[in-house]
Amino acid sequence: MTVHDTAAAAGAAVVRRPRRAKALWLLLLLAVLLGLMFASITVGSRSVSWPDIVAALGGDTDGFDRAAVAKRIPRTVLAVLAGAALGLAGAVMQGVTRNPLADPGILGVNMGASLAVVSGMAFFGLATATAQIQVAIVGAGVTAVAVYVVGSLGRGGPTPLKLALAGAATSAALTSLITAVALPRGDIAESVRSWQIGGVGGATFTTISQVLPFLAVGLVLCLLSARGLDLLALGDELAAGLGARVAAARATASLGAVVLCGACTAVTGPIAFVGLVVPHAFRMLIGGDHRWLLPFSALGGAALLTAADVVGRIVARPAELDVGIVTALIGAPVFISIVRRHKVRAL
Image 1 (cartoon, rainbow, N blue to C red):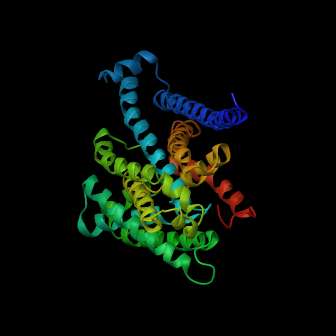
Image 2: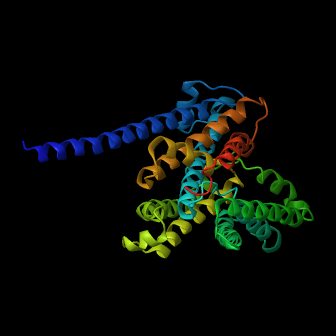
Image 3: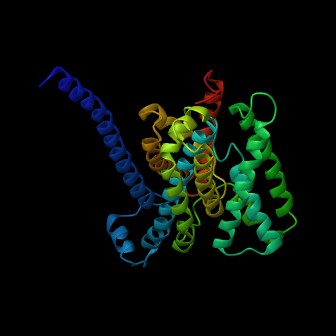
C-alpha cells in the first residue's frame, strides 16, 4: 500500500468515526425517548401495573387503571409529535435566520397561530380541528413574515437581537389581541384561557389523525432543506456561488417550519422554548451539520416535551402542571444565558 493510499484510508477512518459516534448518539436518544414514552404511560396521579398497560393496549378499558392508560396513550403520542415538530422547527428557524435566538415562541410565530385560531372560533365559528389547523398555519406564516420584516428595518439588517425584540413585541401585542377577542365571548373564553398555556392533556386519536398529515408535510419539507441550510450558514453570496438557490432554499425551509408551528399550536396551544433549547444542546454535541442536527432536534424535542409532561404530572399530584409551564421554567434560563453570550450576533 502506498503512502497516498494509507493517508486516504486514514482520512476515511477519521470521517467514519464521527458518523458512527453520531449514529450511536442518535440510537441512544431514541432509547431515551422510548423510555420516556413508557414512563408517560405508567406515571400519573397514580401508577399503573404492566398487566393493566397490556390490557389497555389490547382495547380493554374496564377499571380505573386501564381507562387511565387508555387516556395516557394518545397524550403520549401527541407529546412526541408536538415536541418533534417544535424541536425541528426551532432548528430550521435558527438555520434560516442564522439567529441563535430563533424559536417559534420567541419570534411570535406561535402567538400568530393562536390569534388566527381564536379569531376563527370567535368570528367565523371554526369548530373542526382541520379548519383550525389550516387557519393556524396561515396565522403563523403571516406573523413570521411580519417579524422578519420589522427585524430587518434599520442599519445592520435582521440581527438576532433585533429579531428577538421584534418577536417579543409582536408576541405581547398578539397576546393582548387574543385576550380582547376571547373575553367578550363567554362561550370560548375559558377554553381559550386554558389552551393558551399549552398542553397535551386533551389529546385524542381523532385529533392526532387530523393533525398528522400537516406534521408529515412540514417534516418532509424541513428534512429536505438540510443541505440548503448548510449552504445558507456560509452566507448568501457564498451559498449562491456554490450553486444554491438561496431564495428557494430559504422559502422551502421556512414553509416547513411554519407548517409545523401552526399545526402544533392549533392542537396543543403555544408551547415556547422547546425550539430554542433542543437545537442549541445538540449543536454543542454534534456540530452544525443539519443532516444530523435536524433528526437530533426532532427526537430531542419529542423527548423534552414528553419528559416535561411527566414532570408536570409528578410535581403537583393529584393535580398537574401543563407542559407549557414546565418548558418555560426550563427554557427561560437558557434564553438568558444565550443572550448574555458574546457570540449572540450570529450562528
